[in-house]
Image 1: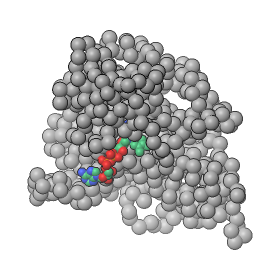
Image 2 (image 1 turned 30 degrees about the horizontal axis):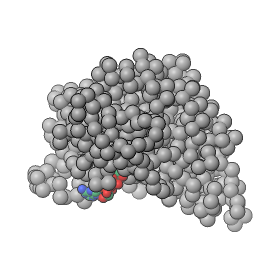
Image 3 (image 1 turned 45 degrees about the vertical axis):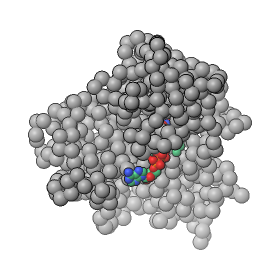
Image 4 (image 1 turned 180 degrees about the vertical axis):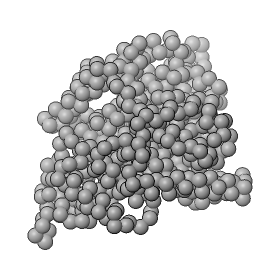
Length: 544
Ligand SMILES: Cc1cc2nc3c(=O)[nH]c(=O)nc-3n(C[C@H](O)[C@H](O)[C@H](O)COP(=O)(O)OP(=O)(O)OC[C@H]3O[C@@H](n4cnc5c(N)ncnc54)[C@H](O)[C@@H]3O)c2cc1C
């Protein structure tokens, strides 16, 4: 292994470029959460579950009630990942991320709000880039939930292309005056705190904006109908001379406002994967009453192999997300920048949600999926939108490839991974495909090098080649990560789920053992023996 890479590069980078990396490619460790923080998590889940059961989660406008957000604030939900010195619970990201999974399994919208606030919003940026006085001034309200946070990056002319950002802030005395327009901002409402990415003196900068409780001539929200995230707030905002204290500008060190945005995006992409893991649980749980209820040709469809295969595939995706969350959140806690790993988590999770929704859940629910009030139809756009926000999947594959192909892609912020505690030998059912994935990574290194030599600077125009190679690397990484994750457990059902996912990712033909795994896993899920579904109340069967 090149010492240079060991000291500075991401595990994926090293896995692709160095031959001697093995167990340390998986660095997740679970840390005990302080008891009071655990009580906050348990209390928040209990509260949301009670509201769901009593049908009091949504107000008359169909959105999460303000009173629920206040109740969550009283419990400490919004301060979970904020340092204790500023009034939060200070939980590590590797505890916060699985908690998002737990919350999303109860209600994906509440989890999404927690993720925006705790992963991509102002608190995360203040924690890393804020001065002590900025933290003392701005974090306590974010910890108590008196102010919720949103992240404003996208503009009408700048979504995928962030070089086109036009919103700017003009220094005037002790203030900055903001001009421009932001679009698609989740969790945006008067009285909230925006992490605003805009230009100052032509350069991207990050500014924390505490919005007043009322719109005025200098900031006005732009409302539109949006199918996705309809249970929460998402709107645009126009600024015309909106005044922010100049002291609210964050210092990106040697970088720019985009450095801050990208760092937050790493957390948010892992948060998305964690939420997806919970949403997939809910999707699977909601399928079970139906497959047991619905009979065709004299038998419940739950008896049918094709239906069980869908359940098994969904379980595999869920375990894949769990594995990626454990791995990547641990890396961030240990000081890695984790950009490549966060891309893997985000792309796998958003692809899984989309495929699971359309190929697995929709087909299984049949025509009733489209009934108004059906859990699938009501959430369809929420299953699809993650493929777009926080980076569209193919563009992220391009970025992933270019991240890998940069030979000196080392980042100073990264440190060597800790040795994995308790990784065991892989079960035989996983070892073969994990070995193949490992070899695939080795081959990809050569392939990437050859492509770079062949196309040089014109590589950027070879998008179809790039995406194809990136996709193979990405799948190999997910396969390895999931196999190592499953191997840490004694749960044979979990091994089967990892095996079903590994077969799918490897795109190799299914052998007899794979068919047996599908049958056994499908049966275990139908019989209620799939541990990740414990405690999730399924939606009742909806009949016209
Ligand atoms: C539900 C939802 C919530 C959101 N929440 C937020 C938020 O809280 N804060 C925020 O700032 N933004 C948010 N967004 C915005 C989101 O991040 C952007 O929609 C996303 O980054 C893509 O930008 P765009 O829609 O402008 O796509 P465009 O830039 O218009 O791109 C459209 C498509 O063109 C293709 N494309 C673009 N460039 C290239 C290229 N170079 N090569 C090949 N193909 C290309 C890609 O397939 C891309 O998806 C949200 C969006 C949605 C839908």
